[in-house]
Length: 422
Image 1 (cartoon, rainbow, N blue to C red):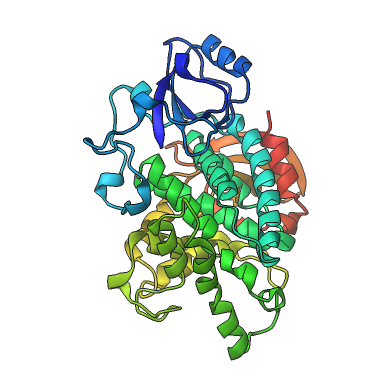
Image 2 (tube, rainbow, N blue to C red; image 1 turned 90 degrees about the horizontal axis):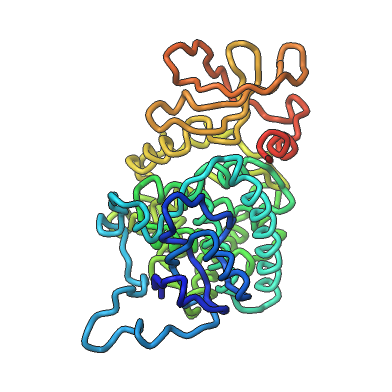
């Protein structure tokens, strides 16, 4: 349950979701993520920073809801559980004149400011999910609290700066595909849902559903999942069971909503009824399931696996666009506008024989993003970095093609750290 409290009522043990109000003229709070208040010194520091009100999530903290904020039986609960939330216009964020009153919208910050926290968070999430995946393979229950915390941090980062986490999805690691696929799908889902205009609470649910959608694969023989050759009918039948296994793992867990279960059950269904496990067609597929299907296929196609190198984003987007009988064409179009033809984190070759990294997309003209030029492809050496907005009227440079970093012996992870860490 989310409740806004004045700073004077904040006590250790409460979980802060976000700062909702602070003195005018005070700079943004230098806190990278939301989290549990463990000491009174933290409260004192927040007050010193000018914080007046905070949004508290009592489902994550160790403190009970104060009596005066508990809903009475005579009046409906204002902060109703989102279990029955549907993706409709009611769930979309509305503009507010006073930004300090936007309960769920953290202030935007620059890519460089967010990148350090995003990088650290991505690696931490990956380690937690690897451990959780192993626990499930060994027969243990799903730790929903861990997943909820990861989803919350991803969504908070995306709302502070859309590009920081998204750039990290371009870093490949074939040895950790299963859990990186979970993280990447949560990131893409959060970015896309934010782009579509959904409120942060709904985006949180969708990101959580993305983390859960393939968890049933932990119950499938791992040798089948990593098999380099074509699967037999029996093996394919075993793989398809990951959907039902995921549903079994999640359906009885507290905090898992019908929206999340819908994403688990239907992410392999297709509009023409050719999907699995039930072969249902478009009339029975929700918008959340359609979003999950698009994101799942996009990341699976672009990620490196033990037996297969990932495809370039533009090819995955072309596939989605051409498969309008399988995927929601309107959502695919908007997904492309959201990510861009050359998504952030991609390396592109320009018409002046220079390489550049895409730092910010352009929703109005997806083929003209903002880039950072860093390499001379003709003479194979690094050059002084230069930020370029390809959409400006006087800019004659254009993108020729996407390139794979290793084609030029470029370590993408190191490149990102060199140019984005401040």
